[in-house]
Image 1 (cartoon, rainbow, N blue to C red):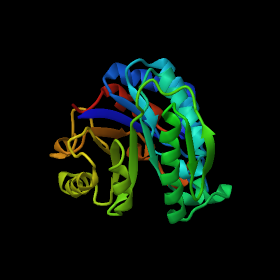
Image 2: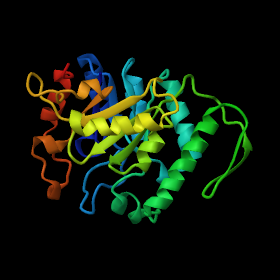
Image 3: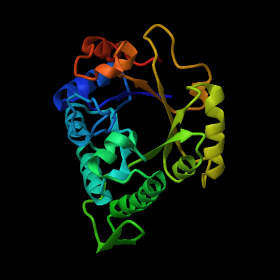
Length: 282
C-alpha cells in the first residue's frame, strides 16, 4: 500500500507557496503522494482564500522530486477537456511523469456549478465526463485526433507535446451508484466514497464490482481510499490494506475541530502540518 495526503485547495491551504512547502515536508516524511481538492467555492458562506489547483500543483512539482501529485478530483464536466489536456501534459512533463489525474462529476453542484451558470444535471454531467475523457486521452496520444460527440466536437488536430509517460486516471464515485464504477473500470483506478465508512466489509463489494467490469482484472489498478489515522495510534482499518492500493490521509480542518458555519481561513495550521510531518501510518 502507498500513502498519500489529501488537502483542500482553500483556507489555510489556499496559497501555492504554503502547499509547496507542505509537499516538501511530506516528501521528507516519507509520504508517497500529495493530492489537492479542486473547488471554486465550497459553500454559500465561503470566506476562504482559494488557489487554483493547477498553479499549486506546478509549485508542488517544482518543490519536490519523488512524490506523486494531482487533483483529486477535478470536476471534468465544468472544465474544457482540451484546456485540461494542455494543463495535464504540461504538468506531467514538468514533473518528470509524476501526475495522477483524478476525475469525477464534481460536488457540491450548488456552489461549484450553479453559482457560475454551469450545468448541474447529473446525467448531462456524466455525458460530459465520458466525452471529456475520450477527448483527453485522444489529445494525449500525440497523433492526429478528431472527435464528434453530443457535447464536444473537435476538428482533426495533433496536440503536442505528448506526455513523457502515461498519465494514470483515477475515477471517483459514490457507492452504491454503479455507473461511476463501470467508468472507473475502463481506466487506472477508482476512488470510492463509501457511505458506510472505510472498512474491509464496505470495500469488498466495490472491488468485486469493478473487477467484474475490467477488461483485464490482472492488470495493475489502483483502489484509493481516504480517512484519518494518528501517528502511533489508530491506523488504517484492519483488512483495508489487502483491498486498497492507496491510503490518503485526510488533512482537513474537520479533524481538528473546525466549525463548518464559521468557514474562514482561521485553521489550526500547526496541528495539520504536524500530522504531515509525523509521516504515514506504515
